[in-house]
Image 1 (cartoon, rainbow, N blue to C red):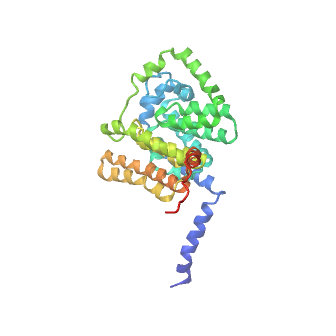
Image 2 (cartoon, one colour; image 1 turned 135 degrees about the vertical axis):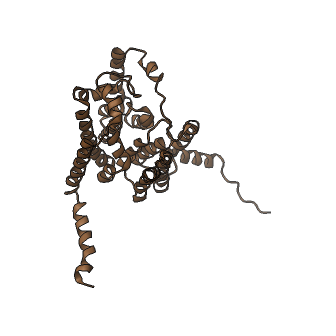
Image 3 (spheres, one colour; image 1 turned 90 degrees about the vertical axis):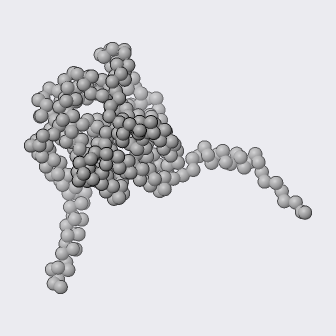
Length: 335
């Protein structure tokens, strides 16, 4: 065997290590992101954006299932032709994904190349808006800026079925000052859309149930039971990741593309790989029900967080200690 053949694996490994250094990661990310945008420019994608969200950006607040104030964040896109604004949304989404992965501890390239993320680019979905809210609220929490965290909570509220429980957790960490911006936004929304807009919105909110009609009845119970697990997880970021995973695994009204949010958090290689399996099986069989297997990913994440960062809550420890004091062991007696 020649010395060239022996050294080839070492050279490949050295090249990979060079490309994955912090210096080269932004360059590679930008190149792959640019290729994705170029592909979107020539492929017939953007169905959801054309029929729903571009109309919202142009003022039709009832053209999508989201709360009416989503219009405020999409408004600039409505000034452009739909195809141009669709590509601009893809660029914004890719750029925001880099920042989110860096803030939440994930791997930017793994997030960019996740099948669910590529799917939202293809459809023109706007899940990056609540995801950006998650990142802003987390960043502000770490820097003790509760008012700015309120902006993140408002963005999270643009997709309540994805962000509601994360919103409550972040609100608990930041206190009532985090409600300043959401409260002002609520008053403005009543002035713009009318006091009854939440009732009108709720009147047509239900949409396709992820995982089938039976899941509609199972999911709420499962979601509430699984959320209890956050009490046994140590670390704020880990708790936030757990709540996001539990929401993805239990919220009935979520599209499969929403699972991309989990890729912004730290994931093990098997947690990343398992998300590719349902899409591969769907491509091979042309059957969408395989996407139900996406539930495996958040379940694995929840189990791993409980295993690696599990703890006994302080309130349970105090209760146990009080029980020991109030019921001391009986002294031993001679028989």
